[in-house]
Amino acid sequence: MSAHEIAPTALSSSHADDFQGRTRSVDLAGVRVAEFAMSPVTGTRTPTHIRRHDPDVYQLFLVHDGPVRLEQRRTDSVLEAGDFSLFSTSHPYFTTFADIGALTRLTILFLPGEALPLPRGTLERLLAHQLPARTGTGAILARYLTGLHEHAAGCDPADLPRLGAIGLDLAATFLAGRLGTANLLTPETRRRTLAARIDAFIDRHLGDPDLDPAAIAARHHISVRTLHLLFQDRAETVSATVRRRRLERARADLADPRLRDQPIGEVGLRWGFRTAAEFSRAFRNAYGMSPRDHRQHALNS
Image (tube, rainbow, N blue to C red; front, side, top):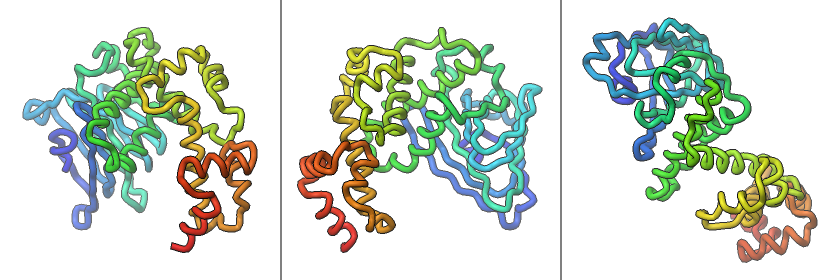
């Protein structure tokens, strides 16, 4: 599993007799995302391994269960859940996954060395460092990685290169922010990263009835015209995006048995509709039935 998914690496484990490991990956046309879960293990990549095969890839990984120890280029870090770290297949490294009584989970974003718009010498200052990712671009990148496997199967194959470009842009922006080299990013990388931030902002604020293009633009310090330009290559406008996502959340709540006793109007209000009548009208226009009919059908089927 390791040699195929990461690079040739010597593995050892105190759980050799009952070792468990699983992985799944998504190829995004030049960028790859893999999710791992495994028993406690120690991995060592030596100069001999590198001479045998070096894919020349940076691996930005997100720890879901810690602690994980990583050592590379004289930097030694202990990572906890929610931390990122970066390592390179072109240098020896050592890593240990602690025994937490369950499989340790992490997600790795594989980034070809030539794809990142940052100088290698500068980028390698981050190798094996603990990179917390609970706010800002790091939080958006973490959400992108964890959500990708949940939804990739339902994506049109033609969308995968675009998803890969978004992942690369988010990673480059996150790393550049840690290095203080955001000025090295291309205008297209900055544009796509801004669009990803706006998408995340919309999702977090769907319950705000005042969420509209003007509010979204003001929060991101851009004009409404610039906001609309960011959405011009999408199938729907900013307002249509907000309305669709609100309706999707409300529709899911109406089908949730745990919420069967919650008044329908309250469901609409929770997701940003100002009145029950407005919610009912928008729901019927989108789905061809009333919220009440949808709830009855979903809960009785």
